[in-house]
Image 1 (tube, rainbow, N blue to C red):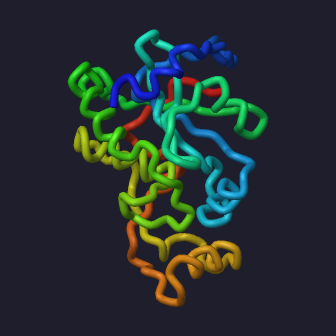
Image 2 (cartoon, rainbow, N blue to C red):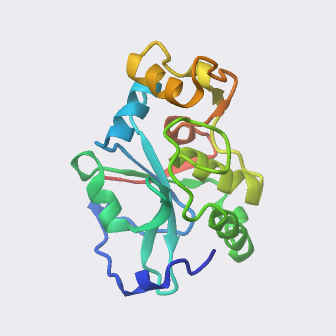
Image 3 (tube, rainbow, N blue to C red):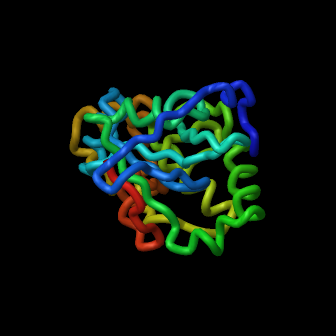
Amino acid sequence: MKRLLPALLLLGFAAGCGPGGPYNPRDGDLIFQNLLSANGRLIERATGEKYNHVGVVYLDANKQPFVYEAIGPVKLTPLDEWTRRGRDGSYVVKRLREADRYLDANGLERLWDEGGRFEGRPYDPYFEWTNERVYASELAWKMYARSLDVRIGRSATLDDLNLSDKVVYTKLVERYGNEIPREEMVVTPGMMFDSDLLVKVYQK
């Protein structure tokens, strides 16, 4: 997948700055934010977590940063555009503690080759663990697990979500009817955020 969407090479980037100075993007970083969208609010209700969206940082041939994400179709979004979508423009970046070990040239090639399998796939608002459609944390988790055998964050099941919330339950019934597969695997942004495999490198 390396060199996705060549037209994006023409876009510029203004690095965000936080209390500790500017963020220096690195290929493969995980970046978290709180979206104000309907899907973002649904995830908040289902999980009770602070962060409802996550993407994977990607550097193009000119070292310009983008975020690979599942938000509509799976796509690349310029980092500055991505950060403006979050609540108050805030976001947190985390990185593998063993990034130097896993994310060498070979590791990155494998990571992005795996990510490329999902390019253009539609967003999944039903938390279904398939490859036909995909949600944000599922995309990031599968990229790392399948390419590098690194499983970031604990997994849960649909039954662990807040199914007592009427909005969440109604959304799942839309997809599954009354036979919700309660044992279906789920990985949320918060589960990845809390992983001991990651270390925070930036916050705004």
